[in-house]
Image 1 (cartoon, rainbow, N blue to C red):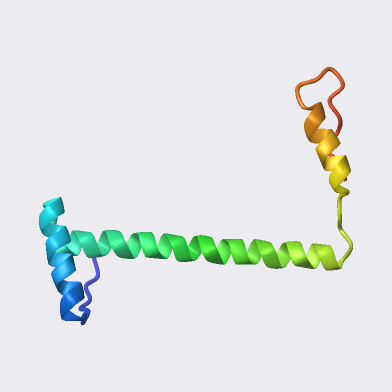
Image 2: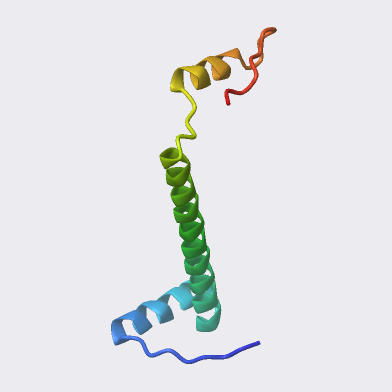
Length: 87
């Protein structure tokens, strides 16, 4: 397992100490948990940004589906006359 050191302002260190004490966890555990959550959020944001860029490229290329066709398809779900997804 890797190791690093981090400088942080006194007020942040006090909050870290208080949170670790309240949770009955080590400061290292709290820091690992916080960094893990931060990285997961950042990776999700990167994924969403990439999906948005891809969707915009499809839009610019003219790859569109009519909204009314999508709504009609959704309304047909579960019925005897369920429609095929619009293309």
